[in-house]
Image 1: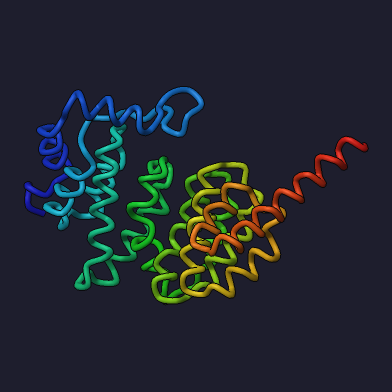
Image 2: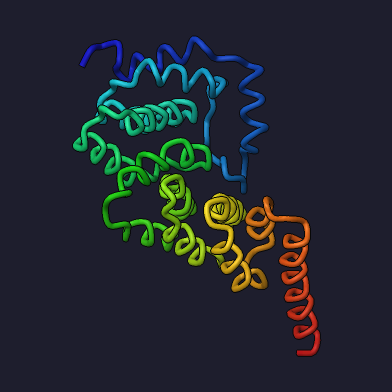
Length: 253
């Protein structure tokens, strides 16, 4: 492997783009601190556009070197690693053997893919793209994981399937995640239901007819964003009525 596409060289190049102003933006955007999703994350202060542009230059990096980047405590370095993985997975001439290496690396190092943007940048093609013509049981295992980020991976990976008009797993995994306690899962579930609904509106409506009363409010809002005003209001009122009924039942008890 040429020295210029090593993990060490990538970090050196990234260092040149550090900015105190960007560092402050990063910290505010990810709301780092105790009790936040970014707890324990460290930032360099590099714009994501610069991270992704540099990842394009380092697209030939080997999985072993990519894993070195994933080991970094710096958010932008890990984002760069995942962007390289994404770009390799998207590239038509990438061989199946490398796609499997990337898929295996992602699942082996989910401990380092620990924020929503890190999941979203890579898993549609690295995970979803790899699994498109294969059994997808692993996604249902991830959907039941104790890890927030593995559960998010399960639903976000289905975006690749949605693009191909294959919606079964989006609806199936969404149903598993409806009782999730995390807001980031509610947003992802609702968002991917919305995208699936763009492909098959009737199927989305059937899903909402069954689950609108009990699904998280955030997920419902996201899922109904592109519906007509009348339909959207009907489902939101279904949720509101169900919550009122639960509240009244609690009072009576």
